[in-house]
Length: 125
Image (cartoon, rainbow, N blue to C red; front, side):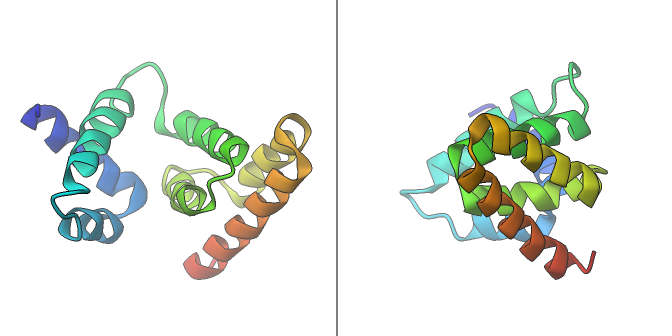
């Protein structure tokens, strides 16, 4: 494991998804799941999210669309929260899901709207 990439990834991951969630994920990892936590933190967050080619807002736009296409509601919930933390508005998030309705399917977009409404309610927005 590359400690520098992991530490930078942990910093970015906390800033985007929230320290409470990330710290709980690390704390609750066991010998089976810790390698995955390390991989995700180092490569997803320390390598890709740290790259200068796209800002965090743009990465959040992309993630919302891709996670909708993959129909992964748990991850989508995290990334809706992250998108808000990265400066996206409710209206921009809705536009992403409208776009995905056309290219990824209406059922996937409906689920994404449902998840986003939950997150907005939890965040008081």
